[in-house]
Image (cartoon, rainbow, N blue to C red; front, side, top):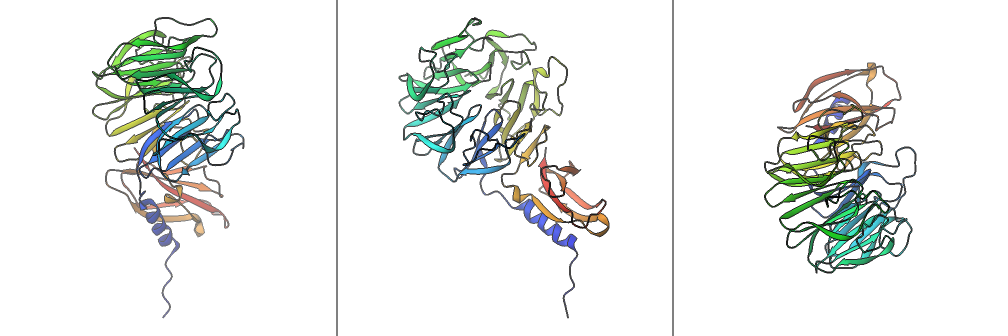
Length: 460
């Protein structure tokens, strides 16, 4: 006797369950944000990227020049293994391999890749063969540390961010400090570093007081071209925003200085500060976007302040009160389990203790990697391989579909749909479903040849 054919709902449900529960073999361990793109590492040493790529900053061998998005909205693997550290500038990228070699790709008009040319590249190229221990990327320039504690720099230097005593660009690495440097940070046009004695040093653009030296450099070239000490001891972590700066002390105190037009200093005002001012205590990690800031407290909670017009703080709002599209005091975003945070031009990403990757904010350039080009003002989990959570199938006769789905305990899920072969134009069907979709029925006007794409995603 011929077996009875199962209805299409059965196959659709089985595919949903299979794809939703296909586990990602390797958790995410490190993250970095560029202006409008992201890099991340998985525990197997593979390098991944998503977002804007018109200058080759993702290093995938292409230049995404298709207007208006210029990028890829799904995470893609760039290097299979062996990557240990990553850094993202405005439009270029750096990474280290386990052998201490430095690699670079992307925008290079000012020599920020350090390869001796001023030509962009869309594939990783080796810059230094060994001995590199840390990297940082600003706006068209780069810094790196060697194992002997020496600091090296290359690229744009119009504001003195290289700290070499000139305002001249260079397309090859040059030594800035001979020894004793333990940490570096760069963004925009200024740089910061920590020495082994816990002292904080800065150089570069200082129009808004971001160097914290008590002055505003308002006359061209608007900065200082050599390292100067700001704090003599006790500094443990640093983060440079586009025109503001953050640092931590060994007592867990957070300090900030620089531009504050969007409340990014978190001091309750919108006034710039040219000297460090206290912001919060009990802090263990910090990050700075262009005009927004984050910190993590010892309980694993995530806090944010600053520019929020695109939802990059992840607080569920889009700040629209001109001229301050922002909040000027720290606000709690996630209560626990946050291990790392990074901020871009107008978007943000973070990691949880389970190795999951989350994103929020502007997504016009696909920098959130969620398969759409839609902004979001709440954190959403990014699935590294989109095939794990996306399926396709025909709309049923009459436009009806029913299915049941039960997710992992403690995780909320959302179900989205896209029509006519048109992801990423997702339309939410159900959100915050409290771990399950039970016997749901969706009714739509059927079109015989319409392809429908469905995805399940986890939500906070």
